[in-house]
Length: 357
View (cartoon, rainbow, N blue to C red):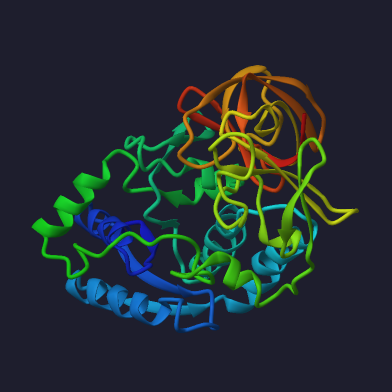
């Protein structure tokens, strides 16, 4: 009897090609569409996603089930998302969604269906050698998604396949066209479902009231008013309303800090302003793929998706907090975002940025 693989079918071309490749390799494949959000149907594409997933499944002659994880998503992902913004931080819900929904709720559901493993359309690889399991970057460095998967543990990875790990996005598009998949030309999704294609500040206004305060320069001069610290993130350039020519030079303004206690937004002029750069970070809420802090201290890390790996040194690693120093100062280090560590192509894990200096 062939191994049973349950594929998380999103409606996009990546998951459809994943299912196709697994079927062609002889696996017993079943597809599942996850519904994670029920509000804001004007912006969330769940209905169209399901239609595309159904068309692709029918084209591949594979069964498609639907499972509703909206309550789990709200409890485990969205509520924390709001809590982090309330505290003045900028969270990344994609990493938490992978940990709590795709590789926990969905994995448990698939195993209950009799699956041996699950598969998704992520661009990443899993290496299995002598009983150990490692998470690796995908072959397509422009699409590598290991950054969003750093919270996964050995048990979750052992039950997972990433069929696209060794191929590029261009390959995926070509395979989809050659096999006649109905969603072969579908655009890649951008952002998380509950935000959709809309202004992010507009979305946040549904959940947070305006709380205006002073907008000051890093040397204490008042240059404007902000609408509420929740609606701004460090490194932000757009939407400040003070223009590039307010200061002594024609350069744009950036958010460099927030004073939560005094409700003050601190800004500075110019992309290269020293207040925008930091070498030392405190990272907490740690998750290591191996289950423990790496012995090697000279590593690489990234503090945002698509950033190039940057040389760093782990100065101190405790059970749930570490201090890391980058070789070069990093732009717009943002509390609430993830710092993910690498040893070559191996994704070791990471944590949440607590503070910087």
